[in-house]
Length: 234
Image 1 (tube, rainbow, N blue to C red):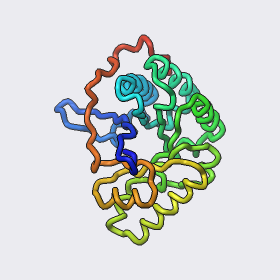
Image 2: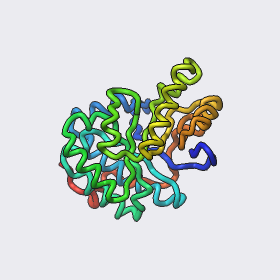
Image 3: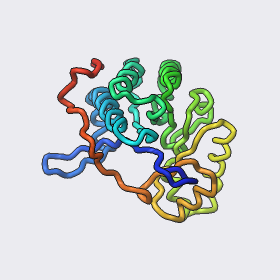
């Protein structure tokens, strides 16, 4: 949600998995397993097609944000998959935002940089997710030309627990964003107090349970068994 106008900015695609008893399996449990089993690229491809088709049927200004696994960069097919997903969904590239963490940037920087540049040339927005955790190297921000920084929720939670330190950190990130001409999203906003503080600091977009909880969209997603139009990634 835009902090100034309180208008909905868009949605983030979240993948959920239940066990045989219908109990939810947390993403931090099944996604690493899918990566280890070599399934994450195929799953990620399905998510790209499903999410872009769903958002295409909604408000013409809404953006869909999709998290990418580091594994999706390794085959070199990501750019083609994204291009085809947008084409089939008839979705403008500017309505797609791809989120990546620092992990893939630590491996093959040249190959990742090439793919990010190709996606940006296409008109897709690129966001650094969980900024403030890990190495958070400032060199990544200018080298890869991110369009958005997503401040990690741990800093947002600390706004009320340890305001003196966290306020300074968040304010520094916002100032950095102005110098590098990026937008800022604050993740994990859960209270009115956090929302007010982040708005006053100049965060562009606020995201969290305070504005709404995850729920399935009403539009049908593509059948995961129907892969006729999906590019081969294996």
